[in-house]
Amino acid sequence: MSPTTLRLTAMPHAPEGKLIQFVDMVYKTFQFEFRQLGITMSQVQNDMGYREEAPDSSVIDLISDVLKDCETLNNIKAEYRIFREITFDSELKRIRIERTDFDINKTVFAQLRKSESIAIFLSTAGEDTAARGREAANEGDLLRGFIYDVIGSEIVEAAGELMHNDLDNRMASEGMVTTNRFNPGYCGWDVTEQHKLFSLMADNYCGIRLTESALMDPVKSGSGFIGIGKSVKRVPYTCSFCDMKNCFYRRG
Image (cartoon, rainbow, N blue to C red):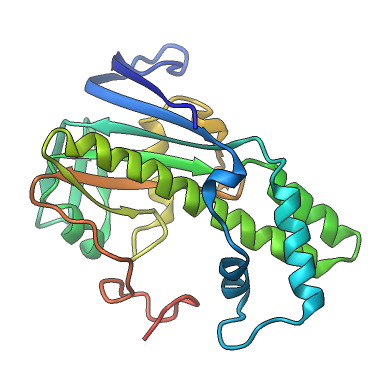
């Protein structure tokens, strides 16, 4: 893991002719090796849907082969930026960061409303996992392609978790704690809000480009908010505070 920390008063690489000012902004960047992420065989099996019975030996061998191949990935990245100038509108369930308003839905607002600052984060598996998955599928090996897809999602989550743990440690030194990570597209937070989120970041931040339809490229990427403060909390992820009743991953 190779971190970089800077304290800035202006966004680097601002669009030509546009300077965006920030107050006491801190950012940190990371690049991970695949082995640092701790992705396991059982985790991949579970996310493939093998929750009550084990796959046969041929599937296990294939997962093992893809996991081994992923050890060569070299574009797994994450970054966070801490913004201290934030305000909350309880009536509209809106957060303002600098001069940008985010309509984040009542569920996410409830988890963030006691925050004293907000970290905007990005994490990505890079392009290689998706490219290798497409190549396998185009060659007719749909199962191998699916395994790459599953592992790509796990990489994004694991890189985000390592980044988040680093933020926890940094904030603990200031007597602060953090919330869970919350992403546009989840818990009723409109995915198009990513355009606002990316407007606060440098161009090509973490190597990620945002499309007009608010999808990230590379597709195996994540973005969102982490609340920071003395009165917030980070709790195990559950489905209890999310109102997306038809979610594939919902439990209970």
